[in-house]
View 1 (cartoon, rainbow, N blue to C red):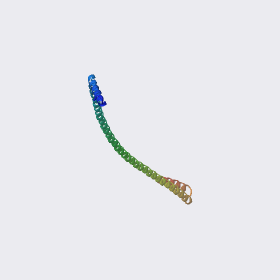
View 2: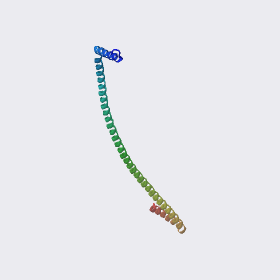
View 3: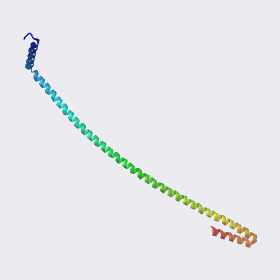
View 4: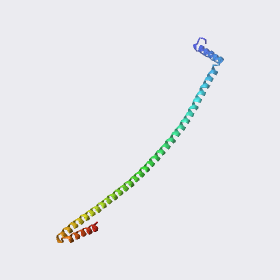
Length: 161
């Protein structure tokens, strides 16, 4: 029995356990395991807290993103409305500009027509005066002719102008 090596290993093991018990190694092991369990528990609590915090931050960013998307949609809508308003104003201004230019052109044409009519009347009056002068000068002679010509010229000018 004492010759077997297994017996000596068992006796050495029992002596080692007794020494461990005497020096309180089992209490140190249990304390170390308790500390390790407490550390793991605190790390798990910290991880849970960080997870909740991350969820709050994620929810905050999602709400900010939704708000930014709504704001962008409002900006696009207002920009479209503003563009339509500007286009309407530009169209109205263009129509007004065309109407004013057309009116100005019509008034220039009317003025040119009136001037042309006045020029034609003046030329006709001059031609009539020349014709009357030549006819009267050939038919009537002397002082009477000069008086008639002057009187006729005066009357024609008054009537045509």
